[in-house]
Length: 68
Image (cartoon, rainbow, N blue to C red; front, side):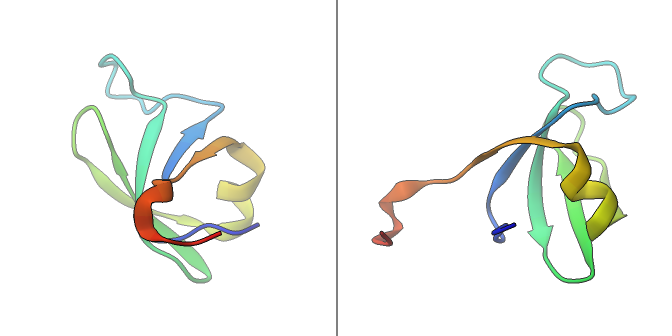
């Protein structure tokens, strides 16, 4: 799966912070683990790549960076 730093992931399960829009996470680091930031509360955490990829519903990427 092609996940890049700066992508916003819409996950199947919400972050337990309980705030609105808490299924969206910003990707801060990519590798064997993902470092994600909850878009609602700002909490940052690491998640193993396998577990993260299973729970991704949609990847939202800014298309203005000139890539095809």
